[in-house]
Image (cartoon, rainbow, N blue to C red; front, side, top):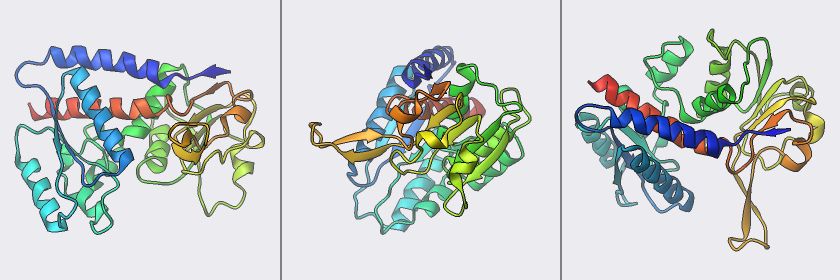
Length: 289
């Protein structure tokens, strides 16, 4: 079994992006990060994005509207960022407070600044294999992990657990593309799938993104499979100072001995997601001229 070290691969990517940004003439790329409320995970994620941006040389603007902000006010804020020529990328951190319409906020971001890759236009470009759009950061990070770990999907059966617009569907579309490293045969499993285990056992490459702690057990995995664990779940653990531990959607201890390659949680897909956000921001800056 080989561990796919997302931290190490992300560090290489950060160095590559830092060199590219340093060589840019004129202003540096700028990413606006909008966070509403004090959700602990959101605070941590935005802080990580700020830190990585600074390391690469990307300017980050963290905007903290009051939790009482209305939908109309939030959309006006997004409109102002859309109109600001000094801002290349916009990210509205999820989750938003329940009184706000999150999908509507995401749709409000101009497609050419949608560095999260959730805009309808960018999703459409992904379907059409149009590289001018932005790809959602976690699926893009998965493909980068696979490529840099020597995994070519051509002719392989890729099984994706989950059908979200954030991970599952874009990951499946990327694996299907007529491109080097892709050309996989893809099956998507979800809550309506009759026998999930029967399908996951057929996977040469298994991508688990369903948000269920340690759902994938050893008897669901084909020996020699490559396993990509996207899940980040908090489960109680009194032995930890925090009172919890982070686990993925895969039972790592049970599955790892079977896998040819596997990502850990944490330290697998997560660091790559942030890197892909930075790469998209650089792409937006280059497109802006």
